[in-house]
Image (cartoon, rainbow, N blue to C red; front, side, top):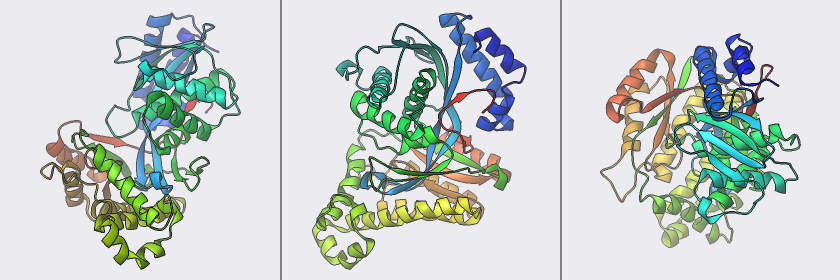
Length: 430
């Protein structure tokens, strides 16, 4: 194991070039080398140059298909992206985690002798660190102290799951530093969800953590949410001459809680009509055979959202198969269909409480105007405000980015690729 100085020398000498290229692509090699060297220098300022250190990385994620179906035990498709959080880490004997993160004045500090949720840590990174440690212990693993420095390109509020990337990189550190070989990447995802639910206080699902932990393009079948079925496949957008663009439409998520909750509630109301808890326990045929009674009892929107659920679950599988069989034109067509379903059936393109604020819908419309017949576009994630997604040919990338940022501001459009590695220890022989 190398100390800080030795590891920087290895990076400068090119010993990590192959690994960095696998994680970020050849076009980012030099920039990533400088990024890791800067992180090592920042670690050294906090803890010294002689400490033996290891490198860890966890990516952000984007939703590909299965919009708003996970909460009713549906099927989703997601992908890791080449924006990530990286950490320089050295074990300590104090049983305390000290993590200095770029952009934060004070280090996070967690005493691992306490493994219960702390009220004052709800909503904080300290709560996530403690929760991940507690989850690993519950799985029969080992945890211990470490000193670290982290920096993230998964910007908070970008719609790419910065919190999930943070959770899973902490899980990867505990696994790598304390020999928890029995805990695989899906288990890291489950532990991260537990940390966010119980120690952070947010009732999130499992899609974000799984995509960040596993990497690549994945489907997740939540038929049994405690044992989700994860299928992973490598996805090479560059081979097809395309980039993935995520645009922040700069809408506010304030006062949208009721809008988000209504989607889940209405889907579950349809399920309850049939005596079931979630839509996954109901057949599509049952819904269509009982539409008259459903619309009279629950209203038309609940019926449309149920239709969206069944089509999106089916589409998530079709998207995966299109990638698996290298049918890229079909993949793009499914993306567009999913976008229409979210807009027209699930109706989460904008909030009816603020009809003048339709940034997501506008972003989708602008994307269609530019890309129709050449690419694909859709809203993603929670909707109502936030981000949209587009698959853009390289030949149109500058045009698309320029036009979309004329509407939403400079820096609103993130140009990404799918990353085929999840949460990992970054070594010379990946």
